[in-house]
Image (cartoon, rainbow, N blue to C red):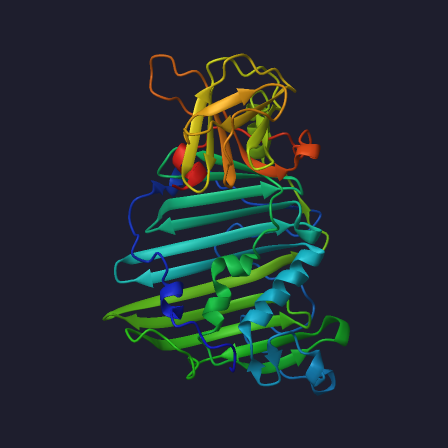
Length: 431
């Protein structure tokens, strides 16, 4: 293989998180949240990806594919990052795989298993993605020594995304307007980092020009790869099936690493289960979440770098005494209690009062007041009246969008009016 210089920390990336064994909640009572595909193949429910159904082409498991002389592509017809001699640029292949899959939509499943002297860590990714990236449903789970350490489930359409986190802590939710297209499942697994460690060659080219697939094989580490001085790749075995447009159809890679006197084995298994025409079902927890937060939800937009317009998009009024907390400028924050009810559909303009940096002011009619400049407002969180207890869990939150004064009333409508819920303060901001 002659690809981009292997990352100096390739071994560290492959082993990322390997020391975090133990803890977590047992998986015996952890309900699975498996993305499903309507009118196409359903992603597998076990740990091994099920390849797409095909009547020809190479077999990534048995390795029985043989070159086909009459279908060998011209030099300029190989997938990006791949040539007659094998893998030449893993970055180009990664980008081509992402673009090809997002164009048509797809379903995929993959796992990364790390085995060390102190235990095992399994990361699984299951994804169903519509054409152009929306809607999409992705579930990533980390299981350490048989216990669930973390599960992240995300569902999104073009205008709103919802994420659920499960693990040791109470279940948390995060909502976002204008979500990005998803990261490709193979990238999420770290597969392309693993590919950089092998010395790949093209061993088979099969199929017609409009449906050609190439099989690549690697049985030894790439001798030109750069690695940390404390890490040695002692074994490498991989098989990769690539479409002519760069789509990764199947992959199986095993990497053996000796690092600081300990042996580690990382195994990747990845496969597409459907391409094109994937219909993404909305999981039950999204429907439940929508019902939960529609009663109290807010939408927020920055105006002229000095104000944040907060609209009550829920079904009930936000009562007086509710605390509004605005995060800005990284870890800056300002807060104040709402002095009168905010009715459904009504908006209020909040601002950081001059000279205080931590006190919010309210204007119910227009973006005006003794406001100081707000640097990068990020999160607006609403807490119910605290009473005699400590600050309760929030009832609504919103990412702050950006608009100008002439468009101050346009706060970014969403197909699903979801912008609130019980998100822990620390997880909402990361400070």
